[in-house]
Length: 509
Image (cartoon, rainbow, N blue to C red; front, side, top):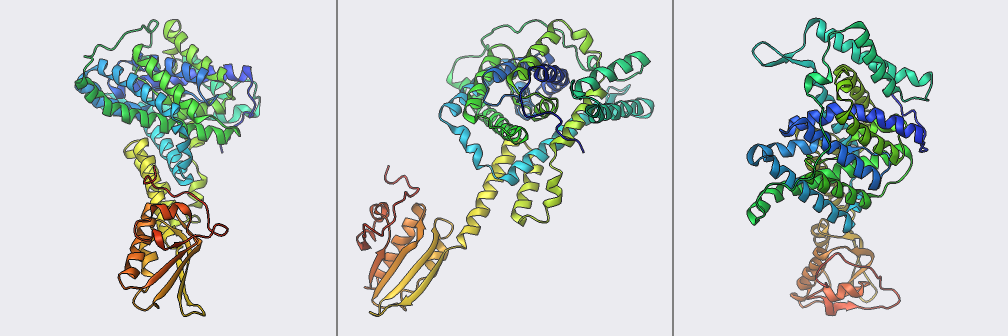
């Protein structure tokens, strides 16, 4: 229903207009995530400005928007509540350093290990999280100071403005694509509310965004081992969440735009951004899938879109806070609902019954864990489950064929990969008691994958040697022979026929 309207080519005008649109949508998000973390609104806004600017200039994915995010804010709550905001700033600095190291050591490439069902689960889970985050805007404070759901005219007014905003975003591109429909919706519906004098919640009702330039300040924490013990666990988690969300968003934008970003460069840029943010009073951040989708949908493709969004956000803080505070929250909720619809992979619902049950389970699992826990745990759980399923399936592919040759020797031909998951099945297919005194095991159609496989071959050799039977191991490579403790002397080397590959083991290192 809601498709990406912009071309895949970077255009300065589209980038600038898209950046302005993103900046308007960044304001309530940054404020909301600052409140989630338990810090002031300017701490979130400064983070959105600094992280957004640095990653836009130096990042590996032009067109991707970064800023303060809910995934990281949730982790910060207990840190701020227990130790104070200066410990948060110190943690953000350390988080940035860890992310820079991840980029320097080329760890960004590991994002390729994330299976497609995990990607779908990540996208769907994040869409649900974005949707649920908007529901808080439908609550008001009653006379007792408690939050309750809107009712009556205020609710109908807000729902009407949301639907109007969504309709403008959807239908305006059919008239012209010269101006981003999201920007038209925000400005147009805001003027309508002002002109008709409608009573509805405004950005200014949430918090004031007026402030000055961020200033440099070293976090006021003791420089001691005790401080490091406090902040290091938080920094590890924040660095992991930030990089996982950023690199998965990078992959998603790659698919949408038909281009390819540079994951390791993005890791370094995210780390540099968080390091600087910690010294300038920001809460840190990472890539924002919602804002990135708004940017892509509005035509933002180049670095100018992210730079414009960051500078415009700073301009709002310094000069235009009064105007921005007059934007109805319903308009921004409508924009985010469009993001939710565009982000959710609706096709995944259609294919659930057609893909393997394991893939469907992983997709649903990652979506659920993203909603109820956090992104990093969801992706890690998804990758682990996918890896276990892969290992289980490939463990079934090992077969051993038994025969007797013209000399009366028992010959076993091994087919398939021998690794930690298949060694039990591998060993079960040999019958030392029933075999002749001369046994040949041919690995021509097999591959020894890891050290568990080496141990299994040694175990097999020990079983035959303990029964005083001669065993010959054919077509094992030279590295296998070096790693075998008990069966190394049983390998018959054939320079022409023997394979040449490496085994996953640190024993030779």
